[in-house]
Length: 277
Image 1 (cartoon, rainbow, N blue to C red):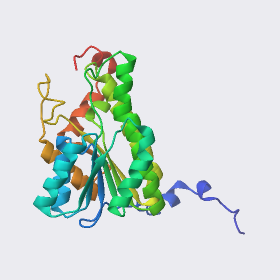
Image 2 (cartoon, rainbow, N blue to C red):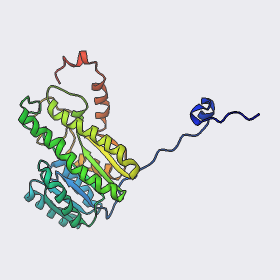
Image 3 (cartoon, rainbow, N blue to C red):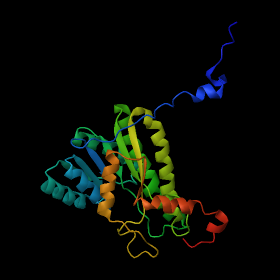
């Protein structure tokens, strides 16, 4: 006698367990060579390291920053040293209305776009300010402006069904601390946004990477008390280039920061609230 039809969800667990799991969908990174990349916040020390690493592999680059003159000097240096195609232009993360026209200019210059790295952001004079206007500037620079331009790039990559987005956040966004909680909250929000974007674009073969540096030897950390395990900005830039071409979805740099932040995240709140961090 034939038994009743059974839906997959009603089948015994033992039979389902025998089925091999589906292989996860793999979204590849950029291939070295003629794959144009846009660098936002291109005059920062880490961005210089990234631009140098990309130029050494022969990739066309568009450098964008508020400091157009410094962008021009960097672009000229890269062309002379490495013989690569380098464009440059003005970009202001805070001017949201300019972002779509800016992206059009980039696409016209490069002909196509395969990757974008955002190093946009600043701590501000007081990364733990309670002044709402100063807090708005920090949030606009580190979150709203980045979301605006990366969202525009995401739409472009989604339509062409390929591309890589690298968003540079910070370990400061992994847990709120009294020394920088406004800055950290903006970076934490950006990390969550990138996670959701990664979820949305995965089926479209677009790769989204969250890059979380710890202390890097830049103007933002110079002379700051309590810094340790300080990384070279050139080495951090090379790590970003590596992230463009492959590797994990979430990158802590240096790698020890993954362990450090895991420990900090697991400190009970009743203990953490009394710590000076």
